[in-house]
Amino acid sequence: MDPIREQIDVMTRRHFFGRAGLGLGSAALASLIGSEGSPARADGLPGLPHFAPKAKRAIYLFMNGGPSQMDLFDYKPRMEALFDKDLPDSIRMGQRLTTMTSGQSRFPIAPSRYKFQRHGQAGTWVSELLPWTSKIVDEIALIKTVWTEAINHDPAVTYICTGHQLPGRPSLGSWLSYGLGSMNQDLPTFVVMTASWSGRKEAQAIYNRLWGSGYLPSRHQGVALRSIGDPVLYISNPDGVDASTRRRALDAMSRLNQEEYRRYADPETQARIAQYEMAFRMQTSVPELADISAEPKHVLDMYGPDVHTPGTFSRCALLARRLIERDVRFVQIFHRGWDQHGNLTGDLPKQCHDVDQACSALVTDLKQRGLLDDTLVIWGGEFGRTIYCQGGLTRENYGRDHHPKCFPVWMAGGGIKPGVVHGETDDFSYNVVRDPVHIHDLNATILHCLGIDHRRLTFRFQGLDVRLTGVEEHHPVKAILA
Image 1 (cartoon, rainbow, N blue to C red):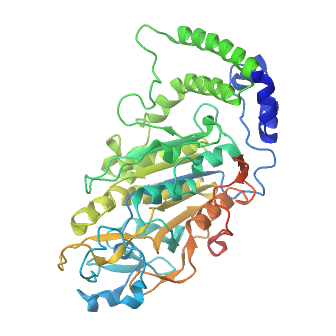
Image 2 (cartoon, helix red, strand yellow):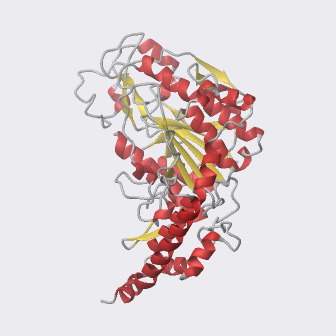
Image 3 (cartoon, rainbow, N blue to C red):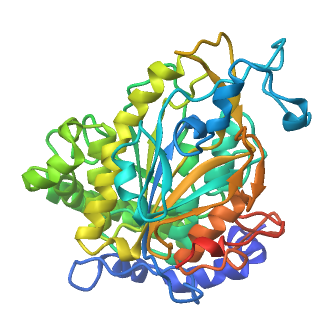
């Protein structure tokens, strides 16, 4: 079959309008570069946002590994009297266990050894491990009852990031790029950073598919910002190649790609042109972004001493604010090492020290600059931890296994009601007793804050209109919406 006719036969309605919007031949490249050499705005889908958004941008602070909720945000004082007692069968109710503890002869209760205090006008309980976060509780909405079906790291992280436990789906940031488009043509719409960590070194691996575009056009995938070498891979010209030579090479490649597009009508060819042009512009914009030398001392001090070390969570948080200032749509920071199966009291304080001051500084910094009103900030992991101990239990130390039935997430900024606590768990922080929030509800809430009805943001794939939040009924958490 003729390749052009074959493409026309299989073309979807969305592809048709996408191609019409991009234009043909040299017009496509002109629309990317702009009439004066400056980039033109790359819009998202027609009709989006679906309603007036409260937030234009978002920052997702992802604590990879599963932070221990009863040691951080879910205060359970009655557990102290049950130290080393077996978890009642009436609480566990036959729920699934991981293979790491399913073979244990007993499940001894391990109360948190950390002190909690009430903070803010709402009297939010926060652990002594998070003294800086306790200062911003009046800015955040704490959801204590997020839950998921996944019990192991890879499917759980994939699930919350892409809406499906199996790989291959678009990530949240890719959906936002696809639906809402870019606000800054000199930087990617979706930027990802992976921060260093101080706790357990044998941390879970994370994969670039967590910020991949799946079946969406590849230009919507996240771009990783690195802390060593070039901030973005291959952004620097090779030795002996100057900017004018690179420009001529790009022009030649563009002509070849345009010819390829005329022959085969593949929309990914246009995406390739756009990515080449973005990379060229990023040679100027990214080094300026990564250079924090002009930041005032009081701002650097607010983020803490780690901000001076590239790759730390503090440095990533500051860069997230700088990206948001430049109208990057979505920034995600992955902080690994929260998987405390043992030595929790040795590793968890280090993890908290990595992120606590920086999270508080980021929210405060955004607010002081007038950016918090239209920037959504999300903090959380893929699941929680068990109240029972994995391995040996002492008063001073313990470990906790994975627990998907309840875990905390906090949100702040555009669209979020500040200073509220949503949901309640039982005395064992094991089951939700009031206001459960599935991870699809959480993602629906994030999309809602950005003006998107999660039911209407879809992509035709394998004969189905697929969406981030799955096919079952889910809703934004209205109780935390401003």
